[in-house]
Length: 119
Image (cartoon, rainbow, N blue to C red; front, side):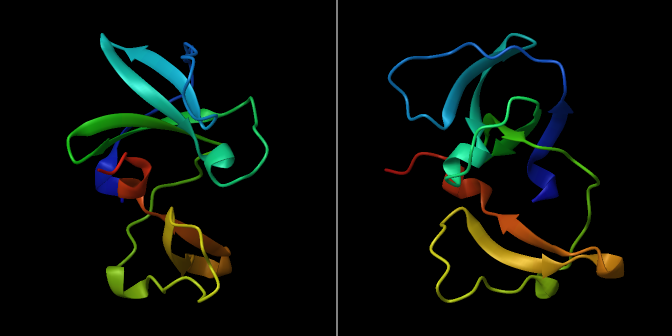
């Protein structure tokens, strides 16, 4: 959800924290706030990539950063255009998919709330 995006950071230094899942790469100090950084590639079972951007999100009042390969643009997609994921799709982080304008491909819709720890 674009409303969750606080900012996109290209210059950052991640401080490693031990004894966390491998997809939690550590924390960054963003103007005095400690922001946990999650690697979406690792969370989705993909290979880690070193040259990434951080998208800082505010999800339910909790700030966190996600490492992504790149950001091309921000789009407003009407909710009714988001299709459900295929029946055999088991990745809980993805809650839909949408065809991009001008036949630019298909985009998976990330469920940011699934990034947060659950009780």
